[in-house]
Figure (tube, rainbow, N blue to C red):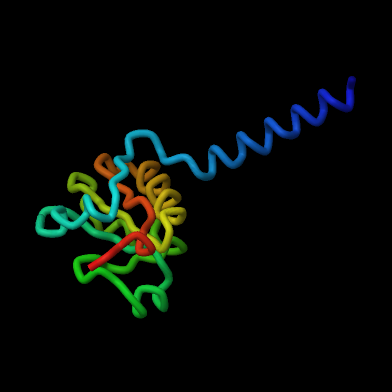
Length: 122
């Protein structure tokens, strides 16, 4: 009985941990790669690729600038908090984490590209 209760509590803790790591931040909009295409024409928006410089060099969308997740907190100071920020990575995981970083820094308009570059088709 006690062993079963401990197992249930451990399972609940693991599920909660993964939920908190993988769930998008509150107030962050999520769009598909297809929905991103018309947004790229808007010069009043900021497009950030949070992959590593080598990943970015290998393949990127020309409107995006590279701000690796590891250095995003420092580089984000160059961004406007009042303009929408679009985030992309390879699969959508790092951009979820990047959205949480920007949210904590006070950015109001954040959009995550679901599926990242893996879902992107020119």
